[in-house]
Image (cartoon, rainbow, N blue to C red; front, side, top):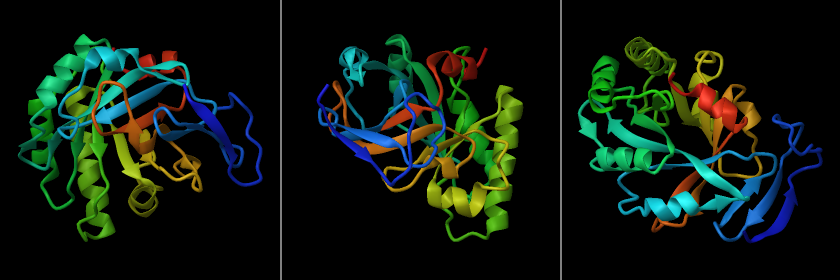
Length: 243
């Protein structure tokens, strides 16, 4: 697979297989995919949007990261109150047909009506048994007060919980998490974006997905792809999905 490097960031100890960081994680360099992989995770996935225009799903199905297949694909569905990703329907159908566990996400704006944003997503995404819960992508504050950001997010999340019957996942970065989510929306599972070896996802106590790179190279996809790990094992990933 082209793993040629090993880094221990800091002076802490990492126990292989332990699902929680003791101090600093060990990373191995995967030159084939041009990423640094945190040791101790075996469930990998990607997230895509219209920027991954052409995907050879057969080749992607054969891809291996640290000897493991790509298990899940998150796909951008909607943005704001009226936008739909132009390739969502195509990506959604082909990812399912290729046998991946699928999830859909909405890019959220605190300056837009949260119920209209939820309706945009609900009218676009028909989740089925075996799909992952819906995802709220919250990463821009649009210079809104903290209280407005939290309340609009809560309204959106409550509506999706009502509609789909499952608690949504929040995708965010460490900066947004620390400023707006931690201590206020801790009852939701977190998908954290953090691409640096120097900071730890353990800062987001409820994280279950970790986006480790936005510049991975994947077989079957031209250009960069976001690469993610799931915190637990494959059985727990399947248990997370809609029944």
